[in-house]
Length: 479
Image (cartoon, rainbow, N blue to C red):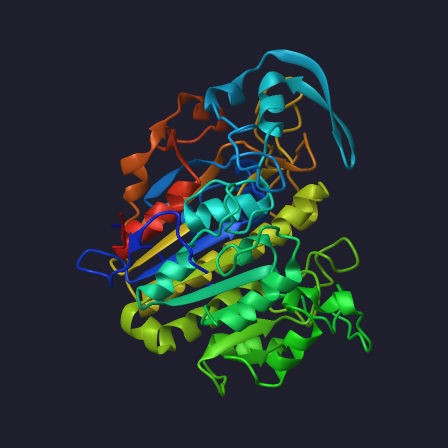
């Protein structure tokens, strides 16, 4: 296995029967899943061009396993249908259909021409982040809006629960609200992703996670400014005002932290905590940085730590906890605001958010190399779905033409073809204990040559396979 280093920059619940077991020989002690929300391959490339002036310099570019993933939902309903009606199918060959069409896609930002039949296919029947998180966390496809909830209207057991049942510790980190769809998918269950209060209460009251960190602070606005008298709805992301008051009053399983100084001290291993479990709300109701005023990157909020800092803090808490130290842990880290920037077709901010995510991956790799090993830890880097169908400037005449590099520090030349989610095949990178599982189950897809990736990467898996890879790495057997 390669050695590489980069410096980190600054409830009856089960539709399948699973027997949890502690890790045996040749299984992983730790699994770290890192999700950059709403990201196609050209989003990854845009950040690399801006940051490095070339491809191949991100830490995950050296991972042994590199392939692609399908993300479509079970159906596009927003409630359980309890039927097979509307079941979404996926044929990857349809993505590459370069038949010219005269269709028009009506987006929130305006209309986009269809150009090619493959683009229309990519824009149809896409998942939302809730159904995607459910697939990644539970191994089951479901309807859009489901948080570990089945189309038969039943809760689904997720990998966070399997992790804790096996004697390990669970951690969840996000650059958006702690009860938002993706982080919720690894800590909670709900028929609707929009029921933030119930999701927030479950996160706090279940005590399932050893560490949970995100935004959604009721006393701070999107600019990181203090709010003297928040409204009732401002408390929704943490389960309502009563739940928030119990949390800050020390009446839950969690030590509560909120300041940038405390998050940085946590990452440095210098914060004394009154409890073994930590719940942190960054002082922002929306995102770490994306929702701040202004356009350029020179006005970062002083109140928000980086995603790399939050990742380092979570790793310190998990590895020092009784279960995490003895038996290992599962950590999910989400760069959630990449998706927000894609919805806005905001190229400078999507690059900024993706770079912040990349630095978090570097922090995780650095932790493995300094505190664990690749024989003990598996890192998976992926996204939950595409967004924006970002392509090159001439992709209106040449289907899937790549974005154009303008050099480090310069925005690449691009063309957006949507302002919402897609079902394009998205990248997945994995390294460490159990990474080979992905190629063991992958399907070949020659059309991936359109993405100009190595032939060794012309394979794809389903998003539900990420859940199975986690179980496999941990040595947890499904019956």
